[in-house]
Amino acid sequence: MLLLLGEEPKTHEGTRRMLELLLVREGLIDRKYSRIFSELMNAHEESNYTPILDFSLQEARNLIGKAQEFIEEMERVRKEKRIENKS
Image (cartoon, rainbow, N blue to C red; front, side, top):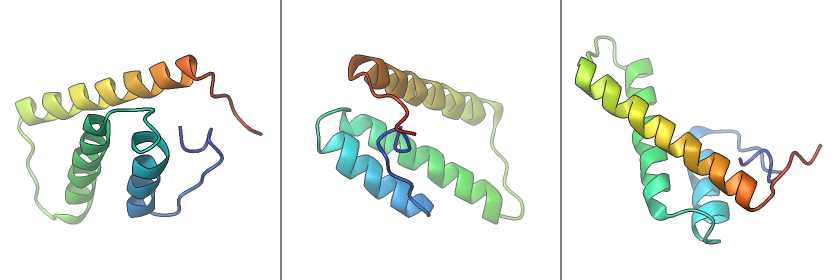
C-alpha cells in the first residue's frame, strides 16, 4: 500500500511510521490495523533474532489470521480509494 502511495520506507520502523502517518492519521484505516501490523512485525523480528523461538500452533494460526485481516483491509482501502500503482 505504501508503495502504491509513492512511499518507499527503508526500515521496519519507517514502515510503521508511514503506515501511521499516511493511512491511520488520514483516516484511511482504523488504528487497529496499525497495531496488527506492529504485532506482526514484532513477531517477525523476534523470530529472526531470537536463536530458539517456539510459536505454538495456536499462536501461529492467530498471527496468520491477523495477517489475513490486515491484507484484506489494505485491499479494501485500495479498491475503495482507487489507489493504483504510480509507476
